[in-house]
Structures are given as structure tokens and as C-alpha cells.
Image 1 (tube, one colour):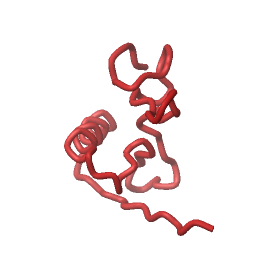
Image 2 (cartoon, one colour):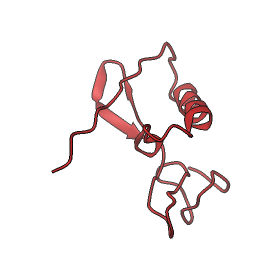
Image 3 (cartoon, helix red, strand yellow):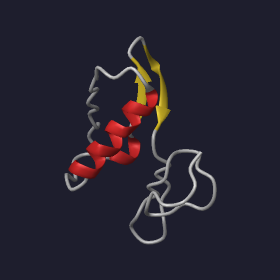
Image 4 (cartoon, rainbow, N blue to C red):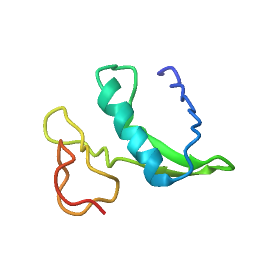
Length: 87
């Protein structure tokens, strides 16, 4: 049996979904070296609708040890970088 993981809910003052996604990308880019944070599981929700969450990244497992870093529900194949078309 594994120990339960904890989730940090980090409210922002941002009012647009695009702005929050930009912040999530900046946090991943600056804190990606911190192995205790699983950015692939990042979700967003409106303050008063926290039960309705939107995934930010695809996070599918790639050959080897990597995960897809493209936006969730992206077009085309999964990849280790954000290059390529997004929805």
C-alpha cells in the first residue's frame, strides 16, 4: 500500500483561463526541477466551481522515461516538447 499524495490548491487573482495557463507554464518552467511536484497532473478550475477541473497537459507516457508535454487534447502525436500544433 502506498501513502496518499497531497494536492496543493493555489488560488490566483487571474480572471482568464489563458492567463492561468500561462502562469501554469511559467511555474512548470521555473520549478520543473523539483521532483516533488507532478506538473503533468496540473488541473485548473474556476474559484466557485472547483469540482469541475480542466487538465492542462496531456501527460501520456512516452517511450523511455518521459511524458508528453503538449497541451491536453492536442492534435497529432505526443511529444516531449510543446512544439507543434495545439488545440
